[in-house]
Image (tube, rainbow, N blue to C red):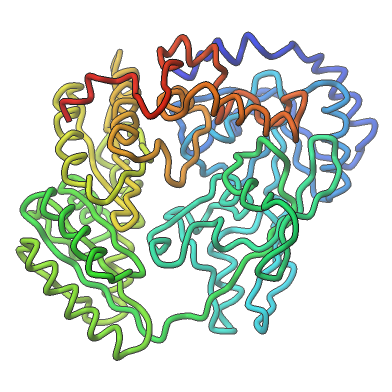
Length: 499
């Protein structure tokens, strides 16, 4: 499906009287910055998934909570859709604007309100960058654990909306495991407090519901996160393999031995070469795959675990195992992995980033299948994995200027996601569904489940004005996709049995 021309969404949204809406906003909110001219709107037409573009009707950039409340109230009264956006680094089209909607940019809510070193918490506004939280907590020897590769730029509000992960989330959890409390606004502009600064709060766990809700249930205005003490020591092992399947099998050995590394990441040869040319991290460019395994904690435990992991890697067929000689080399090893996406961007005109999750035991099988699909679609793929928790990021290389290549890349990506479901996994691990994966939601969930999802959405947003057309497909869409007969674990993709 080419999401650039999504008739399911375009045909469902009513036309908005732009001049009347603009006049109302300017009249009731004279201090609000509003962008309405085409040249000012263009920079907001996409998120990090830049193959898909839509120019928003209007962009509003509030600075105060009362402005956000008023914007939501006005749009709700007029039936105008609203899409909330943070730093715009998302990779699933989750913050893609609407041609007949308002883009609510929360980037100016960028203050760290409080660091409590005793309670080990940080209270921040949604536009605060992920890395800035750890920088503010550093004087207290604390840090915020989830670390997406885009942490230098991505905002915490967007992290919550997508339930972002990162290379150290295997041991320390995703965003949902590190958020204690949220302040949100409903579509009508009413305030809600979800969660608490204690370990538990009475009532339904709406805090978990909002993590990963992709802006469909409310607008996040404040986040309280947990901070952790920095480990006394952290050491990284780099293991080289002559086959990606061996690297995949090594991951299962490590986890099966009861060792939970701080991070366990995998890259294939194409990703290795791209990252080495870009970062000069010291990667073995002849290896077919590498694993980066970080072990942290107290000195004695880390020393023993390093030896155990080294033995497991060698037993799995590693051709070389290196330990970072010092902290500077450890940082370089991770810099290569964290810059894998921009590194691949240097060797291809475009790339299409997938985000599926599979059981760790299926890594060798899935890697083999992706290689087969690469030949089928005649497109190269660079594989980057949060291997320890089975979250894979195949980067499909293509050139959008070549007729048909974007469509082939989309079809290739769709088959990868359907394969993830086939082997018992999920179509997303940390990037969200957005508009990119909405068809594959039909492959993972049956009609009863989708109906329940729509009921939850309607409980918070009865008019369907918050980020419409994202995350949850309509049953009509799934019927066209050919997946409405998914019931009792039966999948509509028998052709994937060959994998």
